[in-house]
Every structure is written in C-alpha cells, then in structure tokens.
Length: 184
Image (cartoon, rainbow, N blue to C red; front, side, top):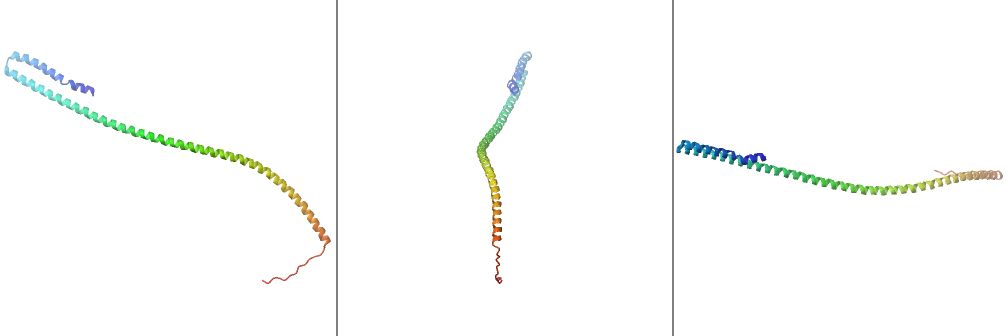
C-alpha cells in the first residue's frame, strides 16, 4: 500500500521531467528552426501534454485517496467487529466465572453440610454400637433368665401335678353338674 502511495506521490515527477526534457529539446529545436509558428505549435502541444499528465496525476491521486478512505472505513468496521467480539467474549467469560464461583460456593456449603451429617451419623453409629453392646448383654441376661424361669416353671409344674394327684387321692368325690339346656 505504501509503495502505491509513494509511486502515486512521485508519479507526476516522471511526466514533469519528461515534459521538461521535451521543453529543453523543443527549445533547441525551435532555435534551430527559428520558426515562430512551429514554436507556438510545439508550445501548445507541450502545454496540452502537461495538462493531460496533470489530469492523469490528479485522477491517480483522487483514486489513491478514495482507496485510502475505503481502506480506513473497512479497517474501522473490522476493528469495531473485533472489539464487539472481544467485548462479548469478555462478558461471557465473566458470566461463566461468576457461575463457576457460585457453583463452587454451593458445593462448599453442600460439602460442609454433608461433613456435618457424616459426623452426626458417625456419632449415632457409635451410640448404636454402644446400645447394641448393651442390648447383647441384656439379651444374654434375658436368655439366662428365660432358661432359669423355664426350669423353675417345670419344677413348679411338677409340684402342682404332685399336689393335684395327692389331692385327687385324698378327695375321690366327683362333682356332676346338671342343668337345663337353654332354649334357643
């Protein structure tokens, strides 16, 4: 781009030098011919050529200025799009960071709550182990008591049988119950 601008800036120098060279050449030609008519024609031709070159140079400068302005606008639009993209990207990154921090904080709170529950459950399990140990002891005592009571019941049942047999031997009477059958 800079080469085009530099060439555009100095592009008029070549035609001007050519024109100057032509003028010098034209001057010597005019002197040689000493013809005022030819001199006037030559001057007019050189002036027309210089005007054409000046017009071409001005058109080239206008084209280059238009190209530069178009490129500036395009770059400004690209920069604006890029800035909008980075702004959106940054906003999204901030949103994601905030969401992650919120999730992390919620996770920490849940972790602390779970740790508290685990500690309470561990404590309850320790108490259950104690109670289980006590209940095993009570169960063993209860089974020993049940065994003792069974043997006591058997002994007492044997005594009652013996007493009933003894009473039946000593009191051999029989009781007969007679009653009317209810109507019904």
